[in-house]
Length: 363
Image (cartoon, rainbow, N blue to C red):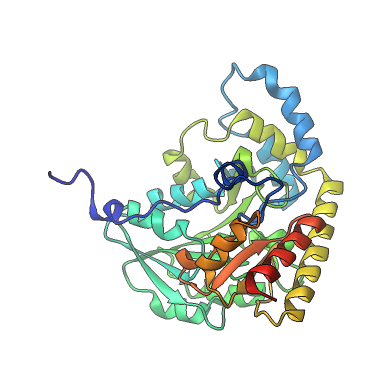
């Protein structure tokens, strides 16, 4: 039979999502399992967001605000950018896809560090493009290596800061000279999904640089800090020119009514944000201290998760932890077969992970 699509899509493997808790418990006949695989907020969604959702339920017979007027206005005020510099997405993932569809033609190239978020390479392949991967340097993004990899075919550069799955981050001051050396016809997609968790003051958001570098797109999400992963809402900040181009490709009602209302309310839920950051900081310290006692290699993080080297390998550890009722993430699909990734949970969840990990390793 003749192929129905091009080689880029033929070669794609679907993104491997974390196993749902309900499915795990059904399969294994266990109860009380926990999920630490998808870097979600263990506190649940912002309470203010929940109230905003309830207030909007009676309007669901109407289409969403296609312009995202109120959410963009609040973000504009908060970030000190113009509303015309903001694009909303069905999660920040959609903006990644919009950027690729808008700025990358089939046969052109994108550059990414490796390992990094798996979606970048998948979207490029689906567009018929090619991704060049620049290996991390000591588990950190090699900005100079990426500069050296640029060719006349390079149209997109992906950066995640902090990087997923390593948790490492580069400094804002190191980004500026990097941006100075990027050709004007190359778009930089800077994914800041975890930037709010960074504790090093030198690791800062680059949104202010969107006013200086017109080919920079900075991505943010409401999935992590604000606990709205299930609603799929994120945004990008760039030059009005790039936002205008992406809006020409964007579906008109891509950010749904409940997501917009919840995101707007969550931005002002300062108490919830403080609780989340406090929980994350304390959870990271507990897990780090316990891993140190076990002499288990792990990497410094500026996120809400840890990359952990396991003596059993990622796949075997994942399977054995499942049977203990703990869902983690094997890093085999990221090219790190000896590693797992776990996010901070509630204190009792962190304790359950450590206890199960010890049992699995025979410690």
